[in-house]
Length: 56
Image 1 (cartoon, rainbow, N blue to C red):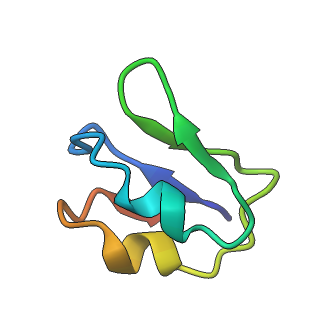
Image 2: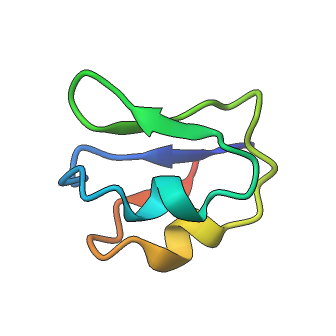
């Protein structure tokens, strides 16, 4: 079960720079997490100022 980013994301980019495996990238609407690359470490969720990241 990978982490996902909700529509609450304001595209600040904080999560992208913190992801240890590079699973986060800018999507059309907001940042997105590649479920196949996500190692479920939770680092992104811990740094998100909008609390927009949670387990799927």
